[in-house]
Image 1: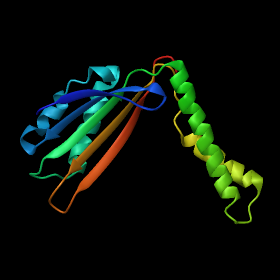
Image 2: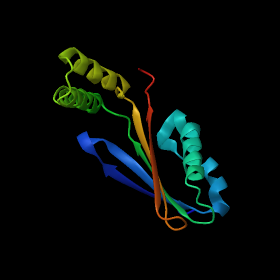
Image 3: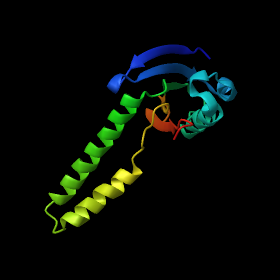
Image 4: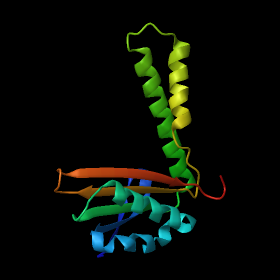
Length: 156
């Protein structure tokens, strides 16, 4: 398996290590031994998710291109900005429900917004964000699947 590592700077200055590789059926067992030092204590869990994502792709004898993006631990200001973004999402959803034309109260719109907000991740300094992406071309046509993970710091 040829592994390529690069770095990418995302929103709010969050730095990601991006690992790209292609998996063929003969080397899919190597997924269980991927070196993912950036994931710290969650390495086993991330490798399991990568293996599960590969199996989900049902690639058969086709190569599956995979990418893993692992953030450096978040700084306090980055975590705060991501959490502020969650508040914005909550307000947008509440406003959309309220303006939908359906006869509902402001309380109901607020409840919907609060319900959504409760499902959004809360970030803390030291947390790590992980994104997985897999794609296969051929067979029944191009397929793509993604998965994200949030590794909480010990402080939270």
